[in-house]
Length: 299
Image (tube, rainbow, N blue to C red; front, side, top):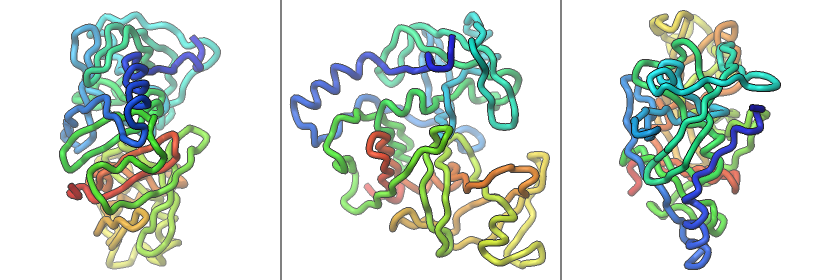
């Protein structure tokens, strides 16, 4: 199977979208609501049923294609097939060459007869996580991270532009673009400086290049605001005393950002992980290329 075949939508959505058009296209129509299960690292997990078995998937907005771990594939007795005409490269250099076809899918009430997953070899995921839910699925919907209520929701994209915020009257609208890997890229303001960032719900930590931070905010290794973190990840990590991060008017105070040297991170963008995102309520309107933001407790 070629890469282009990894496209998926739930058939149930078609009828619901048609109903929304017939009634009121300016009203957002929710089609799924799933309780988020934070793991030991505070990542965002949601359950999916595959052939009657529950698998816990990490919601990964910075992924590409949804995956199952090799261990989960074996547990479910799924037959692995080779990807034709190439392979996928996972962050860190892991080469993914196989996929499986899973059957009898149910997710928050949505159903599908089958779904393709890439097979992530080795131990790329923690024991608590059995796979990922990536933008190959997410981009077909509006995606709502209600961290205040620990609920993950999907909405149809069939609504009036801008008419999506159902939980608050005051909110920020942050435009975004897609990078070459189809990741959401937006601008945030960190301590008064505009910074390009990637929205990554699959990352527990928010991460920034140490050298880029030193250059932008004029500090160095001797600065009192810089502290060294444990090297449990196998490389040096630091934290700096940033004061605020602003999303078009919505502010997160004391944003928790890990600073990693370039030789270890190989990153050129700020990664917005759950350490920051859990302070917010985020509504991703993929078709509009807009992110709607409030504080997590704005209900």
